[in-house]
Length: 125
Image (cartoon, rainbow, N blue to C red; front, side, top):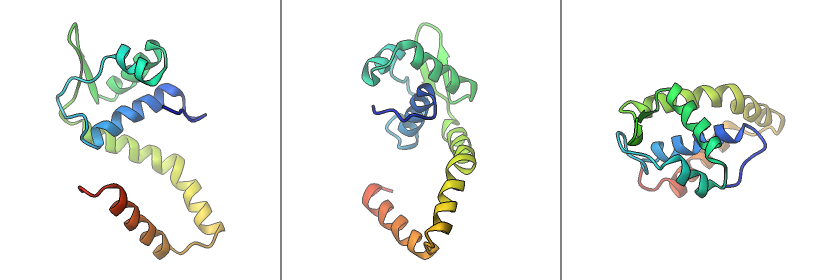
């Protein structure tokens, strides 16, 4: 995985896990990949993945069943969406809105691009 400069790598790993759940690649109540396997896949230390898993546990998105592994909570989708929306609204949307204003982009044009993006990338939805 190519990591961005910000946010911290463990947050980006948590975002990856959340995205897998939102895309339904990882199902609710299923056991998720072990921290060691995910660390190898992402080329980071197991401690970094552990921080991501701790972060997700604090938000009640995953839970640890001692000796068995980490599992996705029943209401993980709602919690992920709430958390990701909050982050988007606070961090990304203001930059996006500023650019729309400065570049004089019409919202109808944005809607056209958005519709095409959904069509091209989420055909099954």
